[in-house]
Length: 87
Image 1 (cartoon, rainbow, N blue to C red):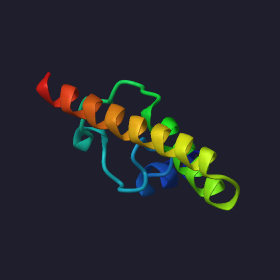
Image 2 (image 1 turned 180 degrees about the vertical axis):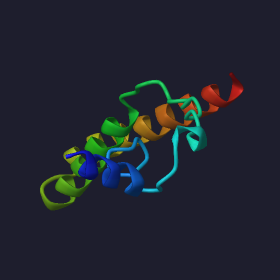
Image 3 (image 1 turned 180 degrees about the horizontal axis):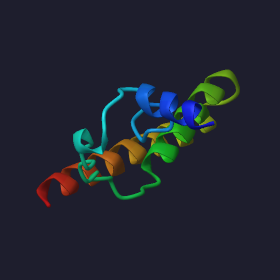
C-alpha cells in the first residue's frame, strides 16, 4: 500500500491540478465577472419574432402585434445596453 501511495504522489494522481501536473502555486484567482442585469427584452424580442412569423401565415393583426413587440424588445434591449455602458 505504501508503494501505491508513492506511485500516485510521483505521477500526480490525486493532486489538485493533476491534469497539468503542477501545484496550487500556478493557480490564478478568476477575474470578477461583470454580469448584465436581468431584463425581459430578449424574451420580448423572441416572442415578437415568433408572432411575426405566425402572423405571416395566419393574419395581419398578429403580424402587427408581433412587429410592435419586436420593436419594443429591440428598443428596450438597446436602451439597457446604452444605460449600462454609461455606468
